Each structure stands twice: as structure tokens, then as C-alpha cells.
Amino acid sequence: MTESKALASKQVILVGWIGTLLIRVVVPAWIIFGALQKALGGTPKSLPRSILDAGSTFGINDHFLLLASLVSIEFFFVAFMLFSPKFAKLSGIVMLGTFLLVLSVEMFGYGNFESCGCFGEKSLSPMAMFAIDFSLLLGILLIKPRPSNGALSKGNRSLLLVIAFTVIAGFFTFNSVLNQKTTDVMLPASWYPKDISTWVGKDIHSIDLFSWVKEWPHDISNGKQYVIFYSLTCDHCEALLWEYFEFQTIPTTLVAIPQSTDGFNYDGAFENPCMDCDTTELLIGTDWIIGTPLLVAIDNGIVKCATENENYEAPACLVH
Image (cartoon, rainbow, N blue to C red; front, side, top):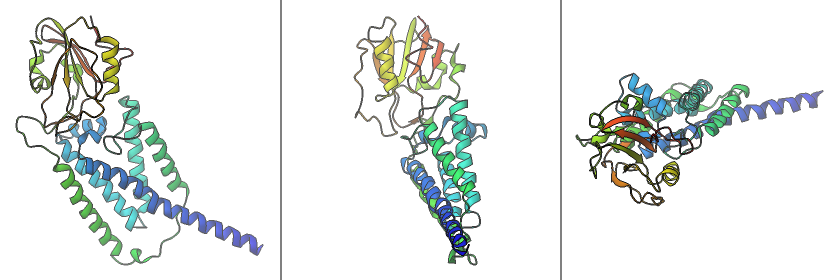
């Protein structure tokens, strides 16, 4: 009986250590990795579209400020996980629960199953991130960490460390992100199409995006035309062009989107199959957050159809 109790005691201790490592090491390391990638990348492209829309709803139209603020909040909760045993578990639950909520909205509200931006511009799919976050949340809910009687729990040390970590991480984040922001008064620092369905029926000259094109190679207000905003490394853009524009019959203009505020990166650029398409590009200096390909069908300068992330297998705007 004594041996049985001793074995049970050892199992409880082992489980307690697993719970402690999970909430004090694994989960904060997971969140820190993602937060660092977003801070160092410094681009609002890493924010899910649902977050950008939520920011606009609350009047936060500075996407760089929004990114820096949200990443700093992540570091704030990480500070409690690292230095406050009393609030570590609650902080982990709040953070992982929030991530799961955002991922759910992205997938089932916005139909985004490609990338969540959780690790900056290059990230795992929302489904993969959901599975990982859910597993971690389940772990900290079910596995009770061992009581902490360490030096960090005594007096005001825990609070002071939380404050110090938050201030340092916040300064680093705002400095990294806001340094990427351009100050060209002629262009927005970042831009994304909030609701392109409202473009239908409008003259293209009343739409801001068309005024930020470097130079139109011909009169796009004359007759039926297509305008395709695309990325040089976009697989879906390449597939759309090969499928429908290798021998196009309607005048088409391809507008290349700079990958960053510094300009274009031609590494990995696909070979354009549309030899008869005119080409131009958006102005450099803005962080363009556009789902590509963005296809716009025009008739005498009036938008007839516009869609982001045009599906090359069943395109919505190829209205001949």
C-alpha cells in the first residue's frame, strides 16, 4: 500500500511538472515566436482580414499602429505566463482562446483557409494553427501545474518583472513596426479593399486604387476590358493567366503589386503567359494588403464585376 501511494505521489508530481512546463515554457514560447515574427516583419499583411475590419469598425485605420498594439498585448500576456504563477494559467487561456476565436472567424466567416498571418507573412494554414492552439489550450485546462513557491512569487518581484518585460517588449515592438511605416503624403501607409462589392457600378476614376497605378498603358475607359492586380509570385495568379489569358480576346492590363514598401522581389517570379496583356504596377511605398488575383471587369470605365482571390477553377468575373 505504501509503494502504491509513493507511485501515485510520483505520478502527481510528474503531471504537475508537465503542467508547469506547458503553461510556463511551451505556451509562452509558442506565442513569443509568433509575436516576434510579426514584430520583426513589421507588415500589416500579417494581420487577418477580420482583425483589419474590426480595427476599422473601432476607428483604427492605422494598420501599423494596430499591428504594434496587438503584438504588444500578446507580449503583455506572455509576461504573466513567465513571471506570475498566480495568473499564468488564466493568461494562457485568454490568449489561446482569443487565437481560436480569430481563426474560427477567418475560416468560417471569411473563407480564409490559406494563411492566418500568425507567424508573419509566411505562416501555417489556419486549420493547422487551430489544431495546435486547441491542443495547447486543452493541455493547460486539463493538466494542473504544480504549486510554485519560487523566488519570483514572493513580494512584488512578480509584478515588477511583468511590468519590465511588458515595457521592454512593447518598446521593441512599436519601434520595429512603426519604422516600417512610410511617410509619403501621396500614398497611404497601408491599404486593403474593405468591400470591393461596392465598386460595381462605379467609374474606375472614383476608386482610389486605380489612381495609385504608376501609369496606365492605354485608355482603360474604352470598351470592355479586364484589369488584374497580381503578385509576381502568386500561384493562383499564374494559374488564372495560363488558363484564360494565354490567348485573351478582351484587352487586359496586368497591374503588379509590390511585395513590400521597398519594392519588388523578382526571386521566384512566374513567367507571364499573356504576351498581349499590357503591364504596369502599383506605386511603391504602400504596404498593399490585397488578396490576389484581384480581377476587375470594366465596360466603358464602369466596373461590372470585381473580386479578390479570383478562383481560376471557377472565375466569377470573366464576363465575356
